Amino acid sequence: MLELAVLGLLSEQPRHGYELKKRLSETLGPLWGISFGSLYPALRRLERNGAIEAVEPADRAPPVATGSVQGDLAAARLRRRPRTGLRTRKAYRITPSGEQLFDELLADERDDDDRSFALKLSFCRHLTAAARLAFLERRRAQLTQRLAKSRRNPTRTTDRYTRSLLEHRAHSTQHDLEWIEELIALERDGEGATA
Image (cartoon, rainbow, N blue to C red; front, side):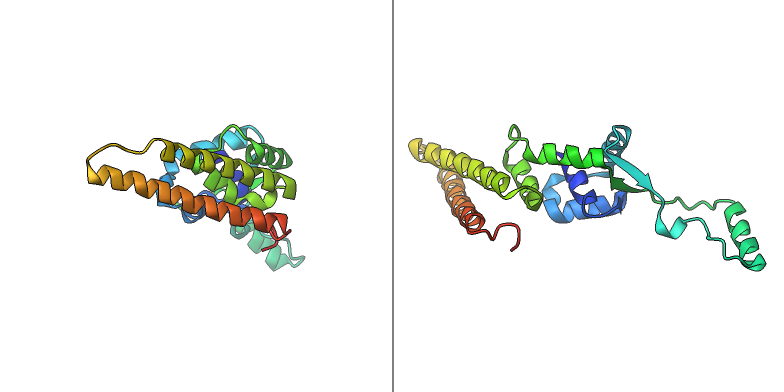
């Protein structure tokens, strides 16, 4: 799932690892626990597989020749200047191969748990209208099944806290189901990707 998130963010614009981590945390929330220890290996895998590539940061681009002797000498000195202890941040961009992989991961139906649903929903605008509708209808079916199961198996526990927790989950599932119904209605009205 981390690969899907990285490719989705890079499909918007090139980013540094730090920017990716920050945006992933903003988009997915702190419970995902995206760490640099998981992000950088994912970036290396994606780069090795040709899905992303490193780009020269704008602030580190080589000096451009000006046509003047003084300007060209200054540019040559900058090119020869030894590197300081500062690390250059490596920026990445998605490749055509990465765009194809992103589309495949986004459309993959095998992994539609709660976390992957939230991630895929955040990039749902990249799907076709028909694929978005199918995605939302799959989620509706999952929630309907989950709600029916909780109603079929009422808790017989005498512990009011456990009972309260199970009731809360049922209410949350009902609320999520109503929300998905609204999204499906918007999608059918043609307002899905534009709103």
